[in-house]
Image 1 (cartoon, rainbow, N blue to C red):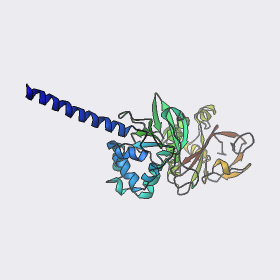
Image 2 (image 1 turned 180 degrees about the vertical axis):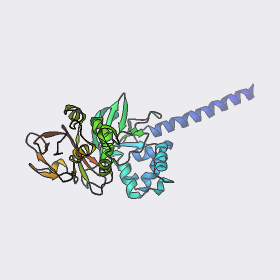
Image 3 (image 1 turned 45 degrees about the vertical axis):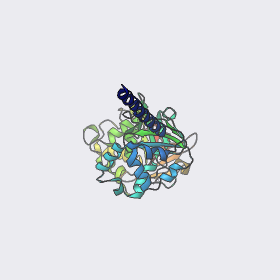
Length: 329
């Protein structure tokens, strides 16, 4: 009887220790007494992220006071990124590149999932090569309680971790690494540009092969500005596509190139009646009208209102416009 009692008491003692240990872990991972860096360091699912923060010396930043929002990729997400880009480990990623990728997961103010724009943009702390002053834009889409970042990374449903309040910000765990978005990435991310995406990525059919224009927007050595027509702009045009009836692939290409100009032209630097040479051959110009709100004016004096300005990409900037601009074909 005594032996049974001793075993029972031993079991209760062990159970109490285990329960206490689990409780301590729970407090460690969910305490607003912890900084973002401390939380990441103590979460076994974020070990690669912590190694990346250490490699880039960003750990100290996330230990300090602040009001950060951090989207934290899981180890699985980082492993997929490393495999896709031919890296054996996080140590193989160039430090300068990794630094900007990590900063692209950080916003300088606090956002719960509920306070993020349902279909809009926030500014991260990351920078591409196109602008030294305008940090990268992150597109937020919220549909059916699912939050998607730049059209690819979502707040992790598997782990169920979001709105983790820490003493220097809020952390959300995500299922993909949010790489530095190009112009095409941002076109694809925003559903308002679905028709433009269809035309830009066309390789056959009624729009013909537009891979040359797509390649320009993807690989051009210098920054570019894209005046991006919304879906409604295409719908409002004669054929529902923004192109003349029976337009050839070459004419479609000319229309697309007419929306592209050189430079990372931010709205703050635009001037009344300023003219830009577009990427058509030969070059045709568009101009700027700032009276009553920013508008882009084509050679027929049609005006496309800017409804989304300064969408910063790693290789340029996008301004969403309300109409398809018409060049001479």
